Image 1 (cartoon, helix red, strand yellow):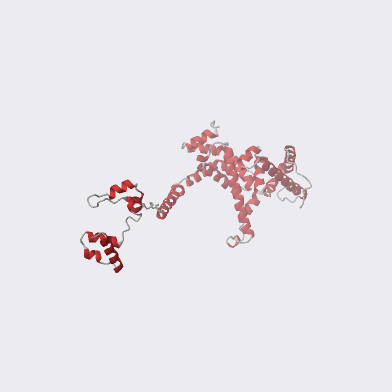
Image 2: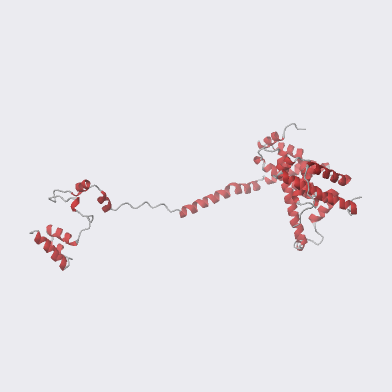
Length: 174
Length: 191
């Protein structure tokens, strides 16, 4: 690595000395080229004409397109794309009927199930298991026998289920 | 002379009085022209850049907040456009040197360089033309326009330390160039 042997001092004095030397060396050769007065008289006219050109209808319409129309179009397209891909949040599925029923306090459930006109004594929740709506085919058949529809009660029962049903009916003394 | 200040004129332009901008042009056209001329080194480019400076200033007048003086703001536009013009010319020169453009131009056509050579009628201008673009801008603003480093810093958005270093190096290069030219007497334009 090559180090600079001479450290350049950038002080105001050093700068002034150097600048004076440059001015002296440039001397009379440092003269601006002549620009005719007519140039200065015409320059504002030419600039005004360029300003007119830049602010004319065509230029303004391009400017309007760049400033307003283009960003507007981009915003609308973005909105439509967003709308296309938007998936609304699906509301959470509610609890099942059995879950709601089982969550009720015993007294409330009793009031729903208690129908003295049909059952005596009334069914209590404590007597029902958690599978309150899970009824076996034997129970369905038992219900059908009670309601006098014997052919329907026996229809579809296996031999074992028929025997179970008969056992239940005999034990009840019916 | 119009007694209105720059800011008053700017406000009038904003209110739709275009004539006020013509007054601003008359006030500053020569200074803008010479700054650009000294940076780009020829009349044709300087003329174009000076015009473009005022057009841009007019169109961007709504963005002028008055934090700096109007002329400082105008200088900034002029210097930036001048440096852009220099870069464009460097690209053209490069293409000409690499013979890519010669396929599309007549054999005797070398517009940018011809103009530059013709217009560099001062030995100092030739020395300035050897400087890198940033040093060139700092040199012109300090040496010719005699602006303070604070003002140049606002125009070029550069630290004062950096500007001082740039100016000092520019002075050294110009000094060496002038010494060589004077000693060897190789400058054909000097009488």
